Length: 413
Length: 94
Image (cartoon, rainbow over all chains, first blue to last red; front, side, top):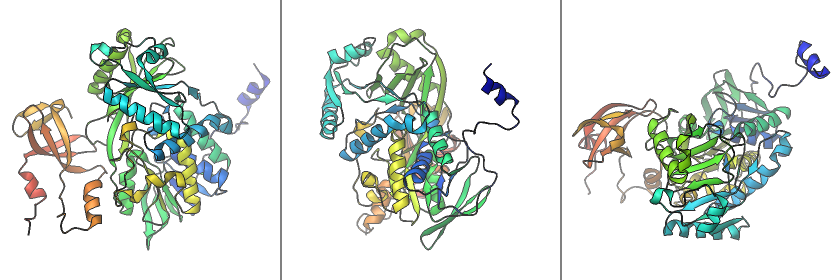
């Protein structure tokens, strides 16, 4: 047994620092309070401390670190979006992702796989060409490819998809990647923690105090805090928080379910998305197929699973990969997706001074974690929206200037 | 929720229904401000609660109203579409 391990075992206090510091009580005041210790909230805390020197920050989490949509998504990272705003924003995110493991000194299992968005109809091919051209214009590597290219890239696929949805081509996005989602939250959390940010788990915000149109503090289940700045990064719980400050948004919440298969031998290298068949799938480093489909069809604030979902998704998986008929489903779960009408997020300043929003992340938020942290920390530090998030502004609906990103959603929700 | 009671067809599996959103009151487009109109067009009451909603039984094409708890996914009652008038009275054009 190594000497270090014996010493560790016999030590009364842990000689190694823990991943996160546990704080017994809240301070009475912080420079910034972040609601939600998911990837987005922790990333904002990390960049506030690292890049803006704002370290007197509390991250308030009603559950545990990364227990919401950060730990429930299907971990796909891509920047093959449709609008110029979206492409530039997500491309910056992909750039940040690549250096993240080194920044954190933590293995994120970031794995560049290549990403195919399959087209089963002429009109889908048209959208793929459109997206490829917008992407290339901004220096993002995306190509509209033909059937033969798809077959070479995914040799195990049934190109006819059971005979009723033959594959005509695809949008191939070379930088498409997957990562270990929990590690992203832990990495940002640990990085923020080491720089002096306090993370308070199992602490719920019960009220946000606003005086004369300005944020002055928040009340929590562990006592009140005075603060001039609050960042709300709570995904599916956003409408509940906004009710506390009297703001209305178009956000509506539907559950999004996902499931994984038992571990299989590696056979699927790239990430596959089919809008027509409502499937996205990738194979993790330990061999499980991570699969997702479209949103549940009606509003619900519960993370229950349904058999309908597992049946529907399995049927479409078998259209593409009939040999999986004997494969078993290991786990199924759901997250609460905060959807917007234009499938773009709502970010930045709000009509309440000192209240900042990072929301409307629906089904597309994980890939944006690093760039959201970067841009929201800039916005909170300076009080002005970062140039990359101007297209996602809170007031775009009153101006009727939407950022239509639905064509780039992985499946037709 | 697995069964919904349609006011016309009785209890049916929920897969036979589509959701049509919350019952809302449209402001008069000729008299409301731009801000009121954009609030109506885009904004929603997104937090969990007990809400009146439009639902349609697809097989019979029958639209009706359900009172549903969106936190627990429990339908409390269903009503014929007439209920909408009572919930959100339409102002007669002047």
